[in-house]
Image 1: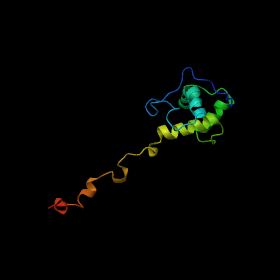
Image 2: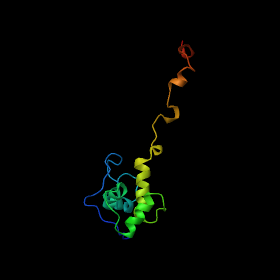
Image 3: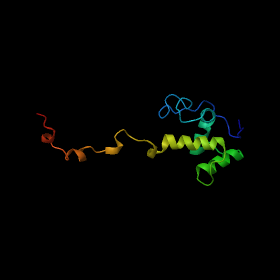
Image 4: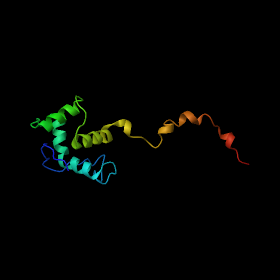
Length: 118
């Protein structure tokens, strides 16, 4: 496994709202990706929010990555990119009724008499 010069989180990172059974059991992440998110996620959030200042070259690169200045270039950044896409990108989530989101628009096509069964 690659070593990254990013500070480890004090406690495991979880997102019980979007991944209630954890990253490993979600089916969205590989085991290495899930482990990276769990180990480094809280530090990545702190860097992203500006609550923690970047001290290493990897942390500075991560800041550049989340700012859109550079592409993801290592496993942590790629795992974070996937996490953000799945957890925050509203376009990723679909409803069961997305094909006919407003069923009332289609109700006028039928009247009760057309279904008259003798």
